[in-house]
Picture 1 (cartoon, helix red, strand yellow):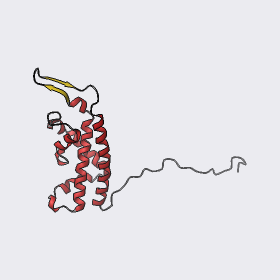
Picture 2: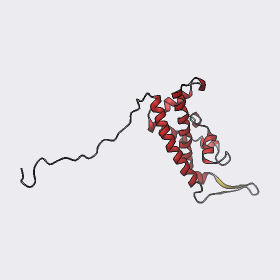
Picture 3: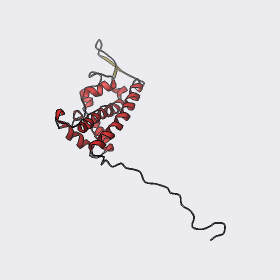
Length: 165
């Protein structure tokens, strides 16, 4: 499976503010990014990746409003999820300076993309909430939400420690 089933590679580059020379297709097509994206989609719902692929197979003009909402929000979520994943190593992936005079290449030694990654994270959280809502509408509000159980519970004593009864 390719990442392009979920989003375009140029969309990921645009979210990060880089071009195809700085961040190549070969890097973005690494299976790890697609695996990470599918895992993030499955965290919302185990059936979400399959639902997205089913909706994406429907021609755009034939999609219902609910299907279009799921498709659009899942694509947005996919772009920013991949941007966050790639952004973790962006400082070492993207060259700082490329020169063909002596065929030199230098990389960043600090974190120049800190502000960009902070913006990516904000948009990712917003798109996650939008995707949860869109999927709930698509699934007919049959999305199961996992609520963690109570770990501790207060209880009263079965006897009075003062009187011993």
